[in-house]
Length: 289
Image (cartoon, rainbow, N blue to C red; front, side):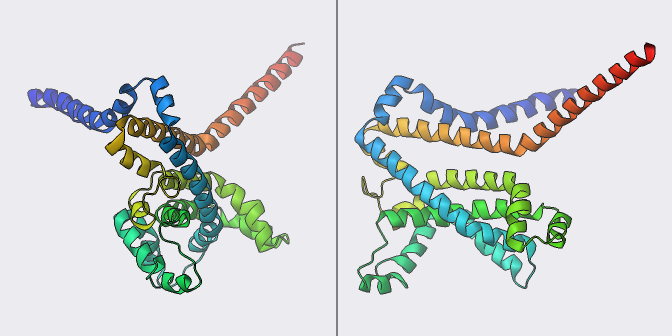
């Protein structure tokens, strides 16, 4: 029995080490293939610069659209109960689970030139597929659920008594939402927005199916990496390193936002204890005198 217990710890440690190595080595290898100077030089190439600019441009628009339409939907799901709500939750989360290529096919079937809506738009000379608009729509479709579900959780965590108090004091629904609900749910909304933006930045499958891979037009960073693998792998490595760094700092900022209330609470508690100790010390000094 003692022998078995002594073996368990090394085996457990080995399994953890293998898991961490499998997760970390592919990401770390990107940074050891080239020097920082070489990475910077490769990021100055036309294919890298064009894809970087297009990625920033499209993902910012994507995030604005998600915030504008996703916030009311998340609040509605958090505060209302209705028949079929669980089914609606499943449908909203479905883009997270289905393969991105399937999402791309679905978007083509609806918004393509011969799609359900695309065929009617084509009559007026409006084409969506294989344009920058298609890039944005692909990013919105894939990344919106990340924001909506996080925002819903954040809104659900708001104390309803505070909302009722605001309404009792004469605050309108809109005023209560922006003055009470939004500030309390803000950390969760920021987390959802960051995760959604990160997912949009790395979107590949739906984009290449619905928008194509045209340099300077629809070729965002993941697509540029795909193309560079056939022409110049150094550009692919440089872009991969940039995306990993962005993802790392994005997730780090999410963690800081999540822990910020605890840090603030501890700071206030510590500051309060310091003030209280100063007061008690002063009163003790006065009593002695």
